[in-house]
Image 1: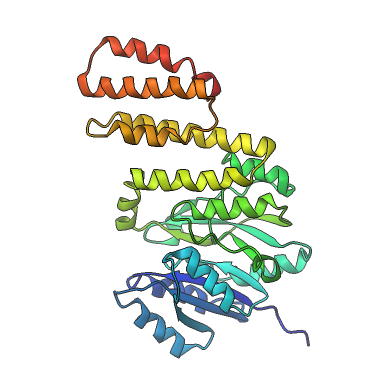
Image 2 (image 1 turned 120 degrees about the vertical axis):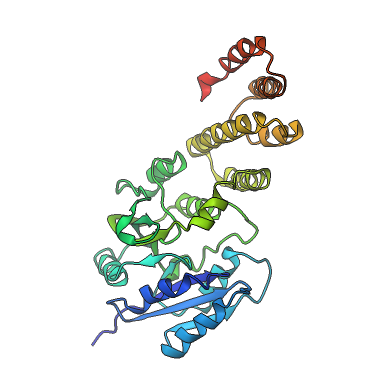
Length: 328
C-alpha cells in the first residue's frame, strides 16, 4: 500500500507563551495524520519553550529546535526548519495563527490532483477572539500563468501571506528566505519565486486563520516609522534589482506612490526632521530626476505649512502637486 505523503509545517516562535498552544492544537488535531511540526525557537524568554516541550513529549511528530546561528528573525528560523524537515511538502506557519481542521487533508487532495504544480495557494481569514468572527484577508485572484500573476501581485491586486502556499519540498529547498531582510519579508520571497516562473494553482478556499492580537495590532499601527520605512525601502531596492521590463515598472510605480504618501504623512508631523523626508523620498524611483526634485519641493512646502500655517502655501502646494500627480 502506497504511503501518504508527509507534510512538514515549519513554525518560528518567539515569546508566544499565551498563544502558541492554540496554534499547536490546530496542528495536533488535523484529520490528516502524516505530518511533522518543526518549531524553531528564536530565543524566547517567556516560557514558550516549556509549552512546546509538553507537545514534544505528548506527540513525537512535534520537534523543537533552537536557532543556532545569526541573524535573529523568522527568515533564519524558516531556513533552519527547512534544513531539518523530512516531508514531501512544506508549509510555513506563524506561532499565533490557526489551521482549519482539514487543512492538511485538503491541501494533499489538491496536490494529488495537480501533480505538475510546485505550489498550491489557499485563502486565509483574520480573526480576533474566534475564527468565526473573521473576514478574508487574502485575495489570491484568478488561476493564470506565473508571469501574468506576478503583474497582479506587484500591483497588489492579489495578495497572500506566508501560510497561504503549500510547497513541494524538492522545489522550495532551492529557494531560501533572505535572512538579511528585516521588513516586508513575505512579499520579497513570493515575488522572487513568482519571478522565476512558479508552476502553481490557486484555490479559493479558506483553510487557515490569521490572529489579530490587540497588543500586537497596537504596535503594528505604529510600524510606519522611519526605521520600518527605510528597511522596506531597502527590501524594495532588492526586488527592483531582479525585476525587468513591465514588471519592474509596475512595481516601481506602485511602491513610489506608497512612499510618496508616507512621505506626505511624515511631512505633516511638526516634529519630524526634513532629512528623514529626503531619505524616504529616495524610494521614489519611478519618477524622473526632474519630477523627484519637484516632489521634494512639494514635501518641503507641505512641511512648512504644517510648521507655520501660512495660508498662501496651500495654493502653492496645489500647483506643485498637480505637476506630478499625472504619474500616480
